[in-house]
Length: 371
Ligand code: GDD
Ligand code: MN
Image (cartoon, rainbow, N blue to C red):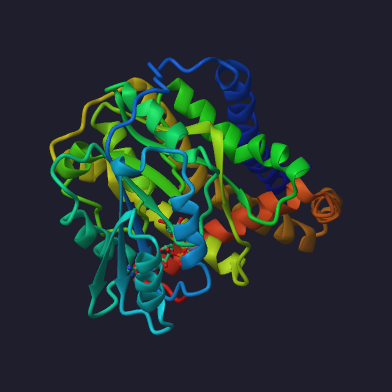
């Protein structure tokens, strides 16, 4: 066996071995444990729900109905919509809806030009009332269950909890497939990390923050386009819990350009992993915590380093095949056949998206993205 083949095989073993080992460790050790958090279902503080909109005419009325139907005291909820110069009549639809539902506190802020989601959210944050304890960001096309707000808020009864996100699933999922999504690789990983301490990756479809902590980090940083993983991880670096819960699910419609949407999300995550820890230190909020540090490092490795191992291994195998190695050819053929297995195919696709994202960040950071 040639040296090239051995090196390639070693890289492949590491590439697949680390995430598989990490997943099984978390699943076995943490996933089924009870929360080490003081949860109180009767805790009902005042919340502000902020919805950023850019050309959301298709979803916005359904979204507002969805918020309206939440099982939570209405006098404790305020909704702030922040629109950035939509061209499809979104603000008009919001105003009409507001007119029909005067009993829900709702404000529409309009920005004259589009600067991106995070600048819009920071603008909205300035309008949140003083006595608000929890701020929730939610996408216009993310649909909650009736009890989602209640489920999310009950974790904040514990003063250690600073950020809460939920599991997500596609809107089109049938009831019997939902269970699969609850139990999918990423949801298991993130809930288990949350039970161990905190997860560094959150879902912007719904992300709830303790308002005073958002203030302490000076709002949402704008070096990356996400409103979820970055503030939540800063809060975790501060010494608070930033968790993904598993007793409610938020659903999102499938998108036409799903591949590129994932590349953009990956771009944000890569910038997040490259910069957030230093940013926490710069803000002077960084408190060393061995558990979060370990989780952070593993996820840093999985997002930034691990995809490259696969690329290098592939290049070595191709080169070695050209040099006449039968083993390399065999491994390449095996890889091609394995692409027929959905889990393997999805994994490879994610690695490709991460690699594209790493290089695409050089061209554009996708702070404002096409819709
Ligand atoms: N006000 C405002 N201004 N809102 C915007 C802008 C903008 O420039 N751009 C996007 N939005 C709104 C959308 O209308 C939507 O409600 C929300 O921000 C998310 O944007 P989508 O275009 O639906 O993107 P997504 O579904 O992929 O969003 C996810 O990715 C982001 C990171 O890449 C979300 O989960 C985000 O919360 C997440 O941070
Ligand atoms: Mn969306």
